[in-house]
Amino acid sequence: MTKIYVCTEESILLDLIYEGLEVDEAELKLHSIVDELNDFSKAYNVGETHIMGELAAELLKEKYGVICNEEKLI
Image (cartoon, rainbow, N blue to C red):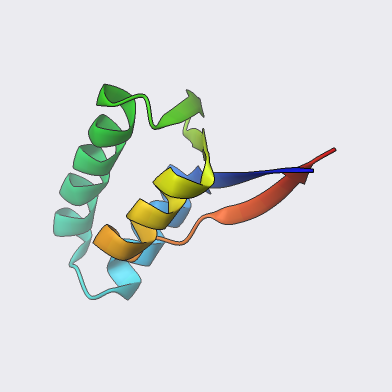
C-alpha cells in the first residue's frame, strides 16, 4: 500500500493558529506555504486540498507545525 498525505488550506490555517499565530499572520503564512508547495511541485492541489508524499508532509510538520492526514491507497 502507498501512503499519501492530505491537507486542506483550512486545516493548515487552524494548525498555524494553534501554533500561536494571529489570524492575519496565519493567513500570510498559509499563502507562503501553498506557494512553496506549488513552486517546488511538492504537492498536487485540487482546489484548496493539497495531496503530497511523506517527505513533503514531514517537512511541513517540522518547518511549520502543520500535520497532514495520512491516507492509504490500495
